Image (cartoon, rainbow, N blue to C red; front, side):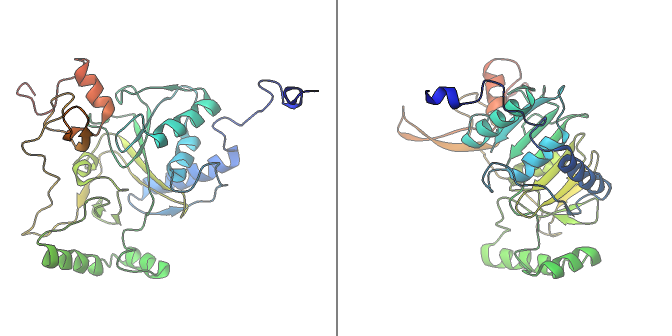
Length: 297
């Protein structure tokens, strides 16, 4: 008898659709309904562990697995890229357990799971963005106690957050937070928008799509419903600003109005800039959509 004879026949293993059992999916969906009803409020949930390491998107993955259906079109990106290790492996897991169609074009997706970016092409009504969140509590940097942060949210007591931002300005001349910039949602709760760059925050404000945020380690979800106000914290005399890429353009598609990553160009031996959103960059190069920042925009 060979080792092959001991292995199960092809198709012998059976998983529930999207891997998670239906009870766990209902638990996550109930938490998401509450999160949508109270924008920016962190809602705890219970769920079994998934077969991926923490820090690789378990929170976002549990949200996606709880919502995805056979007719969905899925796009997964990691810091804007469709081809990173994180994006490729999460995509393989979901395809293996659902069989849904996937796409690199954000316009085609009904469900988009992302780590650290939103697509450059604004998402539209009927689309859902699922963001992976490593640290859902925006007050953690100013208050270590979980009991105290919950009280602060309940009472709208964000004085220490404002003091922290003021100290940052005093020490650095500006608010130095590059990612996970605290935002006030619907004029009420302050939330952490995942480690999104500041560039993406205006895309959350009054957006047409639903944004769901999941933190696997702390088992919490929160949401930004469509057409909801999302305002980064700012001082009257020091307005919020996004990253500046003045004078720079994408080496691949020529866009000057996108979030640009710095890479090492082997041809020139010098640093170069490319669009963080690889799917958008591919569409521009294919002539499907115009480059951002071009004269014809």
